[in-house]
Image (cartoon, rainbow, N blue to C red):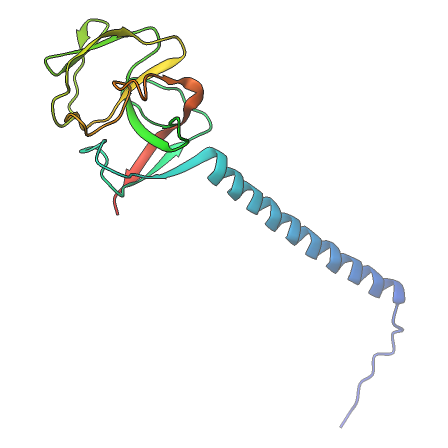
Length: 179
């Protein structure tokens, strides 16, 4: 049996260098992990909103317990967009944008008129009560639920909600899925 012995002297500097390299690698791994965690936190808290629907005010488009994802960072609001906003009590509410700033809106015989022209709404259920013509203020939006049956949607038609200032809108719905 033959025993081999490494006769090279142990270099203390080399050992110290290897330890330092291991520490750097470990620190970089932790920093990378924390960076990824920060990106996930930022995305889920500020860029993407998750809302669970409660109620039938947006039926048939969205139903009770549907989950929606919304863009909360960069978006422009257009007619027919579904938006999430905070009501006066701090609850998230989801409705459809019907009229934009400086437009007039009125409901006659269940039809919605924007700037005197009826709008096509294939997504609604029910017939809305009539509403006098009103002007949507600069920087605000008129929103309604898709369920137009009287009493089913608390929206801009109610003085309790009114038009929604742009600053209260938290995001624009990207998509939804049912539970």
